[in-house]
Length: 220
Length: 220
DNA sequence: GCCAATATCTACTGACGAGTAGATTGCATA
DNA sequence: TATGCAATCTACTCGTCAGTAGATATTGGC
View 1 (cartoon, protein in one colour):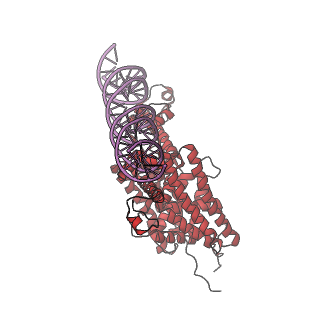
View 2 (spheres, rainbow over the protein chains, first blue to last red):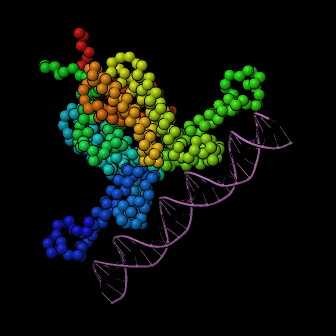
View 3 (tube, rainbow over the protein chains, first blue to last red):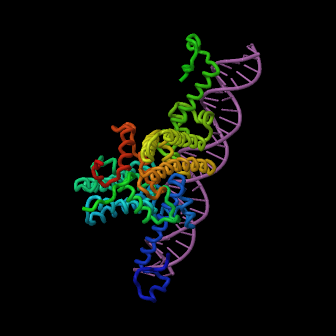
């Protein structure tokens, strides 16, 4: 954690005296470590059941250090969910450049969406209710979630327009897909046998195809 | 709440003196009211963020009265989720007598499952994590959930066996379906325009058919 | 009219946990 | 080498809340 990782000459790298840039980098690393410890514990025990003393203890530091790096408990949670939602927004961004039909693009998004939800910050988004945050932060949280939902609906509409998705209630379809792909945030065990990739792939397949069997592809 | 509802002669019914049965009935009603108030508040604010003092205040009673009727906070929560899981078990039971293909029977179950999840106790099941309960109760909670999951998987397997459901990973299909149908516990607003019946119906349709359009039914 | 059971309250204890004050240490640069 | 900034700690305050002790009606049965 204290070893410099920015590009420096060898003799500098061995020196115990850190440059300004190195110290800033260190600081960033520590901030990151604190955030990660917090989100893991929030996910494992729930936000209200997690005390900042516990989080601090897991890193062998004291509570004021958390306040030094991240601020109060509410800000910690806000940053966690903002990270998660940022990852989802990035997924939406990446899909914007994906070619293909509406369905193909939606599938690409759903796949990334599912994977984020099996990661620390994504899981936190799913597991956190508005009621955990103070009103001002909760408003921001809702706003960011609405944006993701909007991206998903846009893809669904696109698919309906080009005929690659069957017509239907767009809002309810979005909620159904989101619900199905959020759920792994509750049950997925990173130590389990199946990787997030495999799970995401299969789930997207199930949602695309539906339960009822499809007639075999007919040659044209 | 104090009016007797068991069958009694008219003069008895007007009497301010209640019979043993009537008093027992009253007591049951009160117990029920306390449980309902608790589950509503748990759902609205989360378990940890809800104090029993708040629950008591919402009924214009005092905290010890809750202990008198229901026991400690953990027991209250356990009873809430046990109720919800009881409703789901009842749904599974009812489907056992439903005729039809595996898919038809599964659809019937999913429909009831979705509706329970938009009800007070069902919502509580979804919103409650194992980590909210003391270990002993959490174990019981998990066991009851496993039973519901087992019922769903059995129906899926039945459908695969009779060809009404496309073959696939049974466990993951069950999780996908459960996730999608659990999600309304988070977003559904009973005061909203759509009834639980309508929502449940549409969601089951989406999951059965899948996103991709199906070729029009071909006449044999 | 008295006893026991039922139902409910007020008023407390004890623990836990968020958040802060202020001291301390160590490095960095003038 | 003195000064100031960065990083971290110990030791508190204060509020909240689960859970309890024990008092106080009310009422039914004898």
